[in-house]
Length: 336
Image (cartoon, rainbow, N blue to C red; front, top):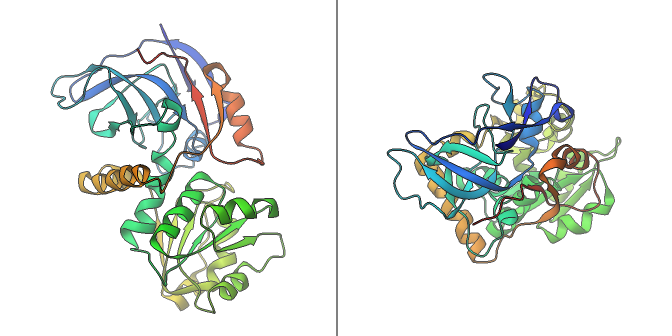
C-alpha cells in the first residue's frame, strides 16, 4: 500500500488526514510518479478553504501541485517520457488527486525533466514560484528599464521570484513587507525599495516617492482586499494589477475611482491557464531552465519535513518566519 494526505471537506490544513491508498495505474496519456518530495504552496491553502480559482470535484481530495518523483509507469500513447528518470510535476490543479502522496498519476503533458544538478527537494521547489512570476513580469508585461513594478508580500516565494526576475529585466522593483527585519533579504533578492506596512503606512505615497511621482506600472499582488486600495492611488497610467491570491483571506473590492483615473486593468491571474497553453508553457519552461543554468535563479529551501509531519509543515508555514524560502516534504521514497 501507498500513503496519501487527503481532506474530507473545506476545513483547511487541520483537516488533513494521512491514509493508506492504492498507487494507481497510468491510463492513456498519463504517467505514474513515485514521489520523492512535494512542496507546500499558498494555493494549496486557498484550495483547502475553497477560496481558490478551482474547487475539488469530490471528497476525499488530495492536496499538492508541485512535486518531484521517478516515473515508474507510462500509459498508452505516452511518448518521450523515460521510465526510471526523475521528473517534476508542473504547477497545475490535479482535481482531487494531487501530489501529497507516495505515488501520483498525472497527465503526461504536465511533467517536465528535473533540472540537472538539483536534488529532489530542490527540483520540487522551483516551478510554482518562478513560473507564477514569469508570465506577468516577463512574458506579458515585457518589463525592462523604466518599468516600475510593485510586488506585494515580497517574502512569499512568488513575491521573491518576481523581485529576482524584475531585477534581471532591469525594472525598478518595489515591495512590501510587514516586518522591517525582512528588508535586507528583500534587497538582496532584487528590491530597490522596501515599504514596511504598518497600519498607518501611506503605501501610495511611498510608491510615488520611489518612482518620482510616476507610480507603479505593474502590481503583482497575492494579498487581497486589505492591500489594493492602499496602493491604488499610486498606479501609473495604463497600469495592470495581476491579482493571484488571498493571503488576507478576502477577495478584493476594487478601488474603481483610482482605476478609472489611471486607466488601469485588473487581471485575475491563474498560472494554470498558461500551463494549459502549450506555447505559453514552453516559453515558461525555456525561461526557467535557462535562468537556472545561468545561475540567475536558484532554489531557496527553508525547511524540509518527513511525510508524516505534513500538518506540522503547514503549522510552520502559517506563522511569521525569520527565515525564507520553500517548505518541502520528503516522502522517504528512494530514487532507485
